[in-house]
Each structure stands twice: as structure tokens, then as C-alpha cells.
Image 1 (tube, rainbow, N blue to C red):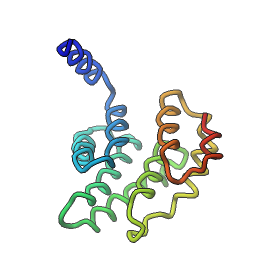
Image 2: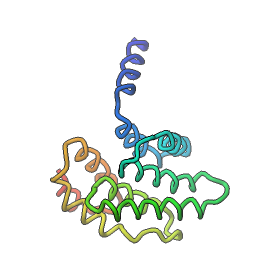
Image 3: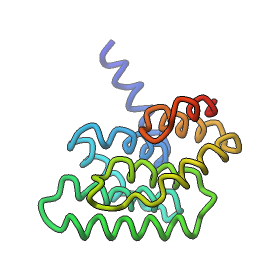
Image 4: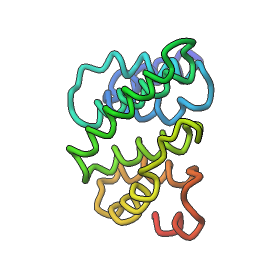
Length: 158
């Protein structure tokens, strides 16, 4: 039985897209330093240069500051600058907004990287219904656990 379960899991993971793998790993990254490191490693291995993949790579840089011993400030600054540039060039991409909002929610306030929370939250609420089914599922999962959304705002995400 265990062998069958292992084979099924391996099969699913093998055929899972890179973007799905990034999403799943990112969703778990803040749970532990091991998950953070796993996400960073996965992001670094990605060869895609599309905006969303690049956004996850920027988030990985920012998150690396959480577990790094040196150059923490530089990692956050480089990652944040990169993420801001990507969003500036792709302002209508809801997944990039989710990435930035989650980073800004979870980064210590003293860092000062919190400027997009209101805009991203409003963008997510206003554009959620226009997304495809898999992206809606991902965004909804994020919104339901996010500290930035009120219960009334969560109710609008169906």
C-alpha cells in the first residue's frame, strides 16, 4: 500500500507543472526554515523567464534574508526592487500582486517594505472573478489565510 501511495505521489509530482510546484512550495515557505530553503532551492532551479516565475524568484531572494546570516539587507533590497519592477511591467497580473502582498504581510515592519498592501488587496478583490479556475483556487486559498483581508472582504472571494 505504501509503495502504491509513493508511486502515485511521484507520478503526480512528476507531471506537476513548474508553476504549480512553485505555488505549492511558496504557500508552505513561511511554515519553517526548511520549507523556506526548499522554496528558495526550487525557485533558483527554475529556468522560466516569464513574469510570474521571475516574481517567485524575487520573493525567494527576499525570503532568503530570513535564513541568511549575512547580507540580509541586500537580499531584501535586491528582491524587493526586482519584484517592484516586475509588477510595474505587469500591473494587471493578480498572481504577482498576491506574491507582493504575502511578502509585505510577512516581512518585519522595521524593514519598511509595506507600500503596496492596500493597492494589492483592492486589486485582488476587484479582479478575482476574471481569473481562471486554478488561479482562483490559489488566490482564494491565500485570501482566506491572509492577515490583510477582513471577513467581509473574504466573503467577496467565492
